Each structure stands twice: as C-alpha cells, then as structure tokens.
Length: 92
Image 1 (tube, helix red, strand yellow):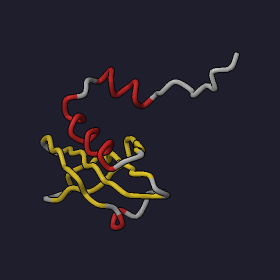
Image 2: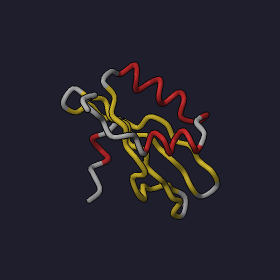
Image 3: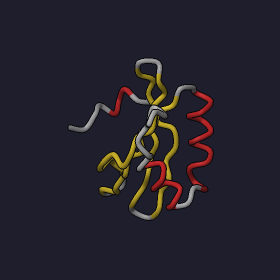
Image 4: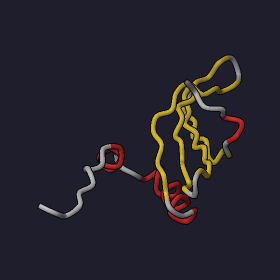
C-alpha cells in the first residue's frame, strides 16, 4: 500500500526525459526519514510509481548531508547502503 504523499515534504526532484526521482522526508518517532520515489510522466505531469528505498537518520543534519551526497554516490556505494551488514553485539 502506497503511503499518503501529502503528509511528506518534497525535497528534490531529478528528471531525465520521462522518468524522475523525488525525495520525500518526514519525521517519525524522533527519526528523520528520507523516501526515494520513482516518478513517471503521464501526459504533462509526473506521478509517483514506487518507493525505491528509504533511509532513517538520527539528526536533521545527517539527513541533509545524505541528500547533498546522493547525486554523486556511485552505484556500488548505494548498493552497500541498501544492503547493510547485520548489527552484532560484539560478543562471540
């Protein structure tokens, strides 16, 4: 089920011909969350197709730094972010 887009703040939109990406942000339970959505062109307007990924941050500054770095990230860096290693307790 797609979330209600109206409650989120639109951050940036990147367009390439008939495709686009937008970042939406929200604050939930003290965490700052970025949602990356794929957009498609229909007639003369873009509409959300699917959520590609979401990332959560402890501070607004961390979230802003991520948004600034996003356009320059390599595909490999994005894959590592999308597939983090499981957290361990450090005990063996």
